[in-house]
Length: 464
Image 1 (spheres, helix red, strand yellow):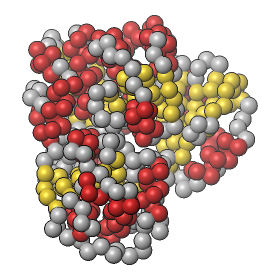
Image 2 (image 1 turned 45 degrees about the vertical axis):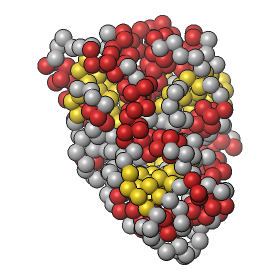
Image 3 (image 1 turned 90 degrees about the vertical axis):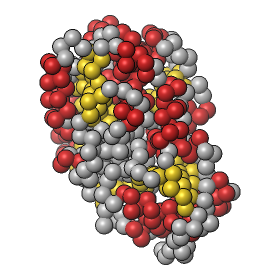
């Protein structure tokens, strides 16, 4: 079988590997896993996003679960991944299935497993499911134990308990939401907030871009925010951008400045520690900014660094008292919720920061960087089918110098990371979800960042 789970779920191109037959086979393997572990009696929930045929794929998966004799709840409409995850935990179910490819191109879809604690499946779980894969479907799909349900009310009630929504309503705050045509559309409005939403209509092609909150995909929202800020000159403006299944985010300040996921993490950390006075430690993935380390040192917070993938953060959140955990791709988990990333909750918490401090996000970020140091980040996604062997080869014999600079530390926690004296770094890593070699980079100046990225691309081409 060619079906394999990556960093977060099994993802493939629709009609190539991601077919109805393969979705049913994966679900059959999942049903066997549930029965083997004694979880089948607790039932499952199945959700789906706005992608092409997601509803039909979800129905196919739900009917296999039902055919296996498992009580199955199927979402009656497209939902964000964290909404489905919360229903799994809140209802005490065996696990959840989320049909989504998150930020992948429109011609992809995916199958995510949500464990009974309400978070991404651990590697040992997905390996166990893979071991049950069979070449033929042996379960007759059935709707006998299938029930439609709406997971929204319980999720919205939980979110209302975690965020001061009245503070957002009472301040002069103009909120813009860009769900990028994904399943997060409408949720800020459902919470009773007066927001302006753009790209909220379902579009399986996502307007011709990948539903990932990166500057190259945000021309429309950047322009809209700038125009809104001019129109409402006396109000603070902030835009929350969600990815395709709303478990990740980025932000745009009222000035039109894009705030990447590193910036968002630092802003959330400040708010939770300084304004909300939450206790608990911090977890970040291997490819997040060094500014987090400096903030943790300032606040006296213990910091844990994990491999890339939110499942590693979820493990920490289950075992320890974690205030905030996050990853470079924009997934943030906040204390009080399930051990799961949630772009809606993180976005609301970011808006709460603006309401508390009555300043723009850019102004707050600039204050932090003026005190602790400026850090500039970018990444390259290089398409190649040889990403894994290339990174393995580079890691086996890492260079002693790079781009004319001495390497002070080599790390191989997840890929090959080269650290420099000025606290800049570059990381080479094979994607766990697409045929890509990702080059992550942080520099202490914009010029340093550009030079390192250029050298990184040349380094990959020379060694390919």
